[in-house]
Structure formats: C-alpha cells, structure tokens
Image (tube, rainbow, N blue to C red):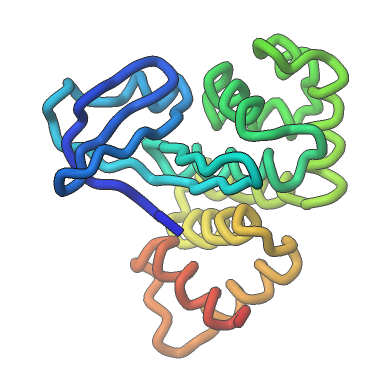
Length: 204
C-alpha cells in the first residue's frame, strides 16, 4: 500500500494533482480542501495517500492532512452507499472539524447541503457513524481534550480515531491505546503517531 508521496508538484487542478516522484508521475484524486493548500507548481510537496483497488480500477487518492484521509476512509468503509467519489465530495464541501461537529450535533441539514449528498445520505452518515462505529464518542473526547488544552489526551483521542479509520472497532482501538499508555516507558510527548505504532503491535 502507498502511504504517502513526496515529490515535485507538476500539475494542480481542483480535483487532482500530479506529483513527480523520482521521475515517475503519480496522479492523485484530491478534495478541494487539499487543493486549496497545495503549493505552487514546481514546488516539493508531500501528500498522504489512500490506494483504492476494485476489479475495474486502481486509484490513488491524496490528502494534505491525516484528518482528511481518516475521514475519507471512515466514509467509504463505514457508511453504506458512499464510495470514493462521494467521500471526496463530502471533504470538498465541508472542512473536517465542521463535519465532525455536524455529526455530533445530528445536523443533517448542514450535511445535506453538500453537493451530491442530499437528505437521505446525510441521515445515513449520522446514523451509521454513530451506531456502527462509535466514532462520535472519540470525536467528542478529542473536542473536550482540545478545549482543556490537554496534549496527552488529544494525542490519545487522535490515535483512537486513526485506528478506527483503519477499520478497528472503537472498543478494541481504545483498549489497545490504553495498553500503550499504561506501559512504564510510555512517552506522553511522543504524539499520536507513536501511540498508533505501538497500538498496532498490540492489535496484531
């Protein structure tokens, strides 16, 4: 699986970008939120990626932040009827923090205003993310940690969310993260990436 690309930006369009990585051009489909943050053509850039494989096609999706990629994966893996194209529309139509707030507050009207989503899909997004994944609890915990200025709790919440985006259930993700932070050599300043790596070892 291709986790990220780092290279020179050779083409930038609202829904796609091409990167030259060691002489190989990679076309990635991107949301508008990523397009808005791309540097000038000819500049080096790093995109986090999701490699999507079907019987008919192999497609690479690129994202400027881990939050964008995590939400993209949640939508295509956890919400029935949403594929990569619709997930990109969601990301293009609403920043990730606003999307999380809309789901937490059951604000289906805000979600339905996203181009291509509609009322029924908005209701399904809220219902399935809440009932099937339990991700909303983790989003709420992250929001509380951020407001309380608690870096360690924020890192823990971010790690749980990332594991959920990788396909783990909230309960098992939370349990693995709890095991990591209980270790005597746990470094609370290491950020979510280190917690994720250690938690994945626990989950194996």
